[in-house]
Length: 399
Image 1 (tube, rainbow, N blue to C red):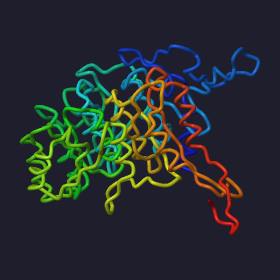
Image 2 (spheres, helix red, strand yellow):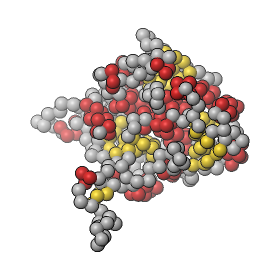
Image 3 (cartoon, rainbow, N blue to C red):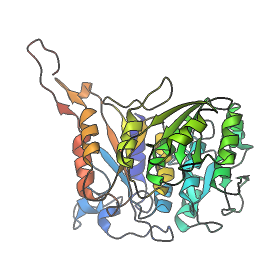
Image 4 (cartoon, helix red, strand yellow):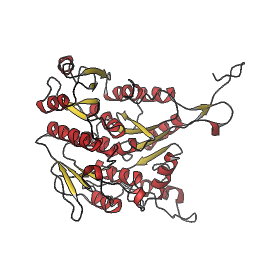
């Protein structure tokens, strides 16, 4: 029901929010009506179906947040998750995050988790782009008790919107900001988390899946360099008092020497192999007690984004905090769906033997316009998410 409510809310939004194509300044200007759904198109109009936004905006198993940049995508996601206008469908707080460093967006995704539940909007330093400004006005945050009744959580050197109560999370660099965000979220929850995600500060594709998990679970994301553990990261881990540490990425991106050093601060597990696409799937499959998605069967939501657009990870993170939508799966290019993704979706494709109404369903959110992920790839994802009839053996069991 939550998935259906989110989809209907997204479809009800004006075309300027979810599927519009953002300009370089984050404004919501479109390239074509095919990617800008217009509510109220009449059947007598030319290309009425295209004007409704299909198939680029949505197919039966996918919904696209079609911004040309992460600023527009963050605004669209925020409005899809918090459609308004009632108080219950508005966020308590909004995280305003500096878009000039992708690492800040990934670390700030922890603010989308309980108890704050703040969607992310991007600010270009002290300048608030049009898309973020418009979305903030529509979201009208009510104030988060856990954040000192703040309506805005300013992460880094960002705009300070007038008329809204704000609290600041600051740090001299992304490592310090990640440490500060960890401390801020721990204070909001009233305790330190017992698990921490370590991501690469050098290779963004390997770090991107951490954002979705942070938003879902509230486990902070801290950064290391390929061959070094920065002092701020070491200090943050020390405050957790021997946590379970999950390192995203193979030795090529975070060295074995760094993993050994982290082992002195907690129990370390490495997740990920090969390239960022394969690593994102490894993380989606992974489970260790209460940690990890464990998405190895049908009946899940997934988010799809390009591995070379790291700001989209933070933009999309609130979808993974909604209680329905799950891990971030990366694709490497616009026009061809990576074979590991094809194989993974086949592994978790839903099936039924008698009546699909009794089955479970997968759904995918596509992040970015058709230049990021083409309509052809979206259609292929849709087909792989579709519930299909499965054969029965002579004993009547599924095969």
